[in-house]
Image 1 (cartoon, one colour):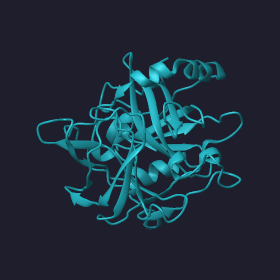
Image 2 (spheres, helix red, strand yellow):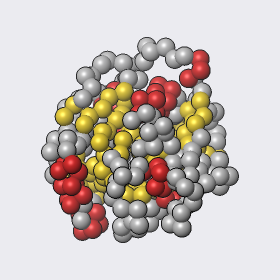
Image 3 (spheres, helix red, strand yellow):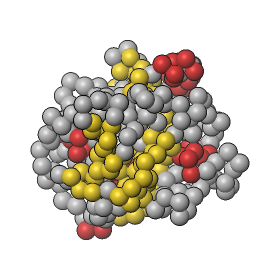
Image 4 (cartoon, helix red, strand yellow):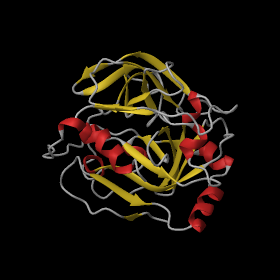
Length: 301
């Protein structure tokens, strides 16, 4: 089914927009049945955005208390389970667009509702005028040719107008609100990362994802680590992960607690002449206009 638009488009690129993806328990059952192991294995990496989109300058004022904020993460409810660790909060995103199945990466993030997954905007919506919200959207935490935590479906997908209207990679951030599974919320099952925005450039981060384009095959969670730098307003890091890692988390303060802080997400990659030899990734800068207001829009759902 093609998702129906829930929020009317507005001009300001910092405004949030969403689309309903499921209308009934029957739809949820259909999506769970759709994602067979064979379809998951054959899904191809999402295409990272190009630098062509340009959104207008946001005119929305930001309250001083929202310019910079830090939200802590959370362990699974009841404490650490035998199958839960910091890596269970990362997972693979699966979706369909134009009849083709695609794969991205994502991460749970703690919120009041305990149902949120953050990813890249291009992992929930095609980006730009005439493009659509994706269908058959699902998240598999701790994917490894399946998961002990199962497949989770979304009740709504979210992004920024700067991405959905203009395809502007500065707004290439997305979120999904997940349906409960067997009466359990996803963050209660696997835990959730914290999140921060308005932080300085130059953080030392661990960058996670499921690269699926050669020379990788998408079968396991991989990471790069290192210092980031500001390149034209975009956080940048040296890393050789390929397509499929899109939407994976950049985690700051990794290893200090069960959870870390989401600092950005994998958005687009660079190579010289051979696309199998990626040497750099960039992500959207997490400000209130990008990640912060999006988090506030979904945190109580």
